[in-house]
View (spheres, helix red, strand yellow):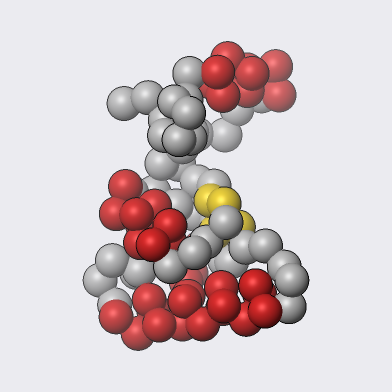
Length: 84
């Protein structure tokens, strides 16, 4: 799911309805959903609450070279929450 749907998720109730409908449609078709451009804990919480499968964005990490990703991933807790 493109970041344009995620960026206003906390401020615009219509975006939450659209995102929820997209997730339900994808799941009904047997597909998983990854949200892009996630930048806040609030976005993570809302996406999780409406059933989004995975997320990526600056909330989790800035872009990294491939050799650095292992150490970053090992610092996350069991729930996938990044260190702060």
